[in-house]
Length: 208
Image (cartoon, rainbow, N blue to C red; front, side):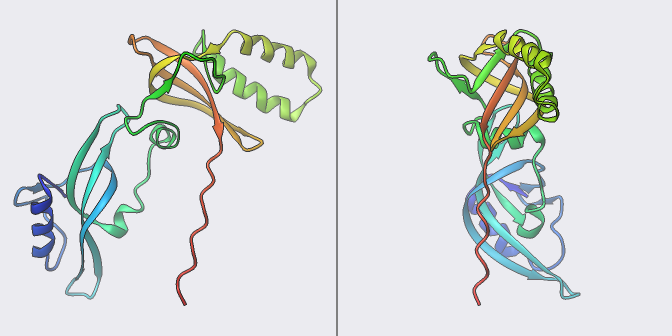
């Protein structure tokens, strides 16, 4: 449930008794967006007539959208149900590699972690070719073709709005990603991005 402010979210949480929330509860409405929780305002466990527990929380958060908007939001959610909601492949990439507005920024200095290629197919071909080289490292002809393809790409500079993840590959702890993106002038461009693989820290064991 999305609410207009913190007060209405906390008020709704306090009123919840039994059963699921309706599609509209006062000034709060159902919402279907990806939200990053920035502050838990309050929590409440609600038990149904059948003994089922629902863990609700009132929150302040930020709405994440692939198109790059970031808005403050308040609301109520089922804590357990929310954790199973995943991201699209593009949203997952944006969370790990861009700022909170989903844009990829590259300054004027030469940095080869993000390359802009002349053809949309080039980044995908480079990743596919690298995968084939792993199967046959002695293929000198393929290596020359890949080197020629890579040399056609130049270090990216500017602000880019990623639109789609076209292909990904992983080597030696690094992730290569072929992206379709829009540059600051509205032109569709093809990017080859590489970054260290993100390692998820293991969860601490529950207290004994």
